[in-house]
Image 1 (cartoon, rainbow, N blue to C red):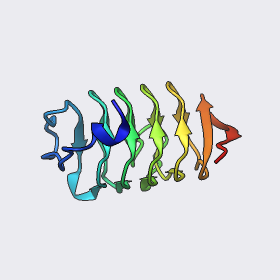
Image 2 (cartoon, rainbow, N blue to C red):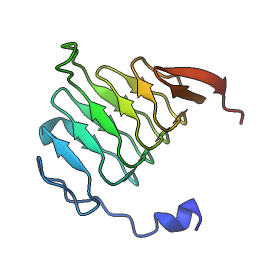
Image 3 (cartoon, one colour):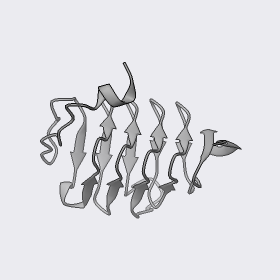
Image 4 (cartoon, helix red, strand yellow):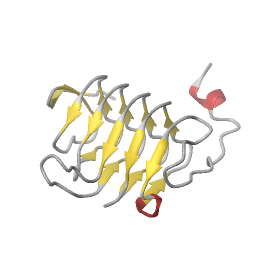
Length: 135
């Protein structure tokens, strides 16, 4: 199925604070959550938007991902910003005050502690930029 076909009938999902969506992902602190057009969030993902989480248009977040705008482990806080058309691989974690650049790809099982620029592939624990995306 092409990307275009996949999103033909896309509609904004109903999102309620602390309650699983029909797609089995959850947001806490919904007032800080912004969801772009034709986004895709995988099942069993968790979003803590206390200090803001923004997903721009066409963002894809794999299953079992966590996006944290606050961390009680190291007391960090700050907006998580996923720019247009970026992709986050399954089982990845994005920590507070991190921006993932436009068109960038974060590989599965990554821990993102710092900003990832536009048009790159990054992965690892912690995530590091591995190469630019041509094109």
